[in-house]
Image 1 (cartoon, rainbow, N blue to C red):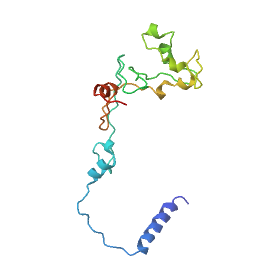
Image 2 (image 1 turned 120 degrees about the horizontal axis):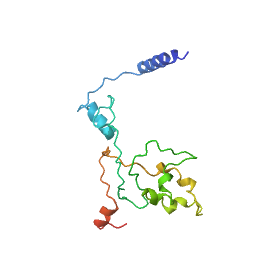
Image 3 (image 1 turned 180 degrees about the vertical axis):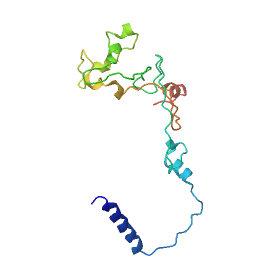
Image 4 (image 1 turned 135 degrees about the vertical axis):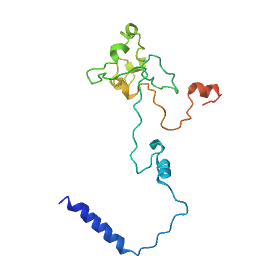
Length: 167
């Protein structure tokens, strides 16, 4: 039964096309190339025509050095300056906390998690990380050498304040 469905749809559509009077097609004034149309539709296709399969860019390499990047806006979560491949992050285990808890941060020379991570939604201060802050990669991302996919003119806090912009 399923194999007949596409055939039935094709027959139906072919019949609908004949029901109205066909008008001659007028040639467009300026031909639009598929490449131009593809670039207009999605700049992230990097110039690959819309009817062609784009090959993905190479995987970005993790910048594995413990030099944090500056933040670009207030309350921006800091990025992760090291690889986290094979870090286990489950309901019962959080490998990040091996180094970033208050008690271990100095021993591992890692920044401790912010005090805000110990506060509940209702403002209660906890001794353990709040469950709403437990899954680190919800907010924090690994630093990579990936080039931007689209043009970006964003200016961070330092640039904006240096230019004399106010809020």
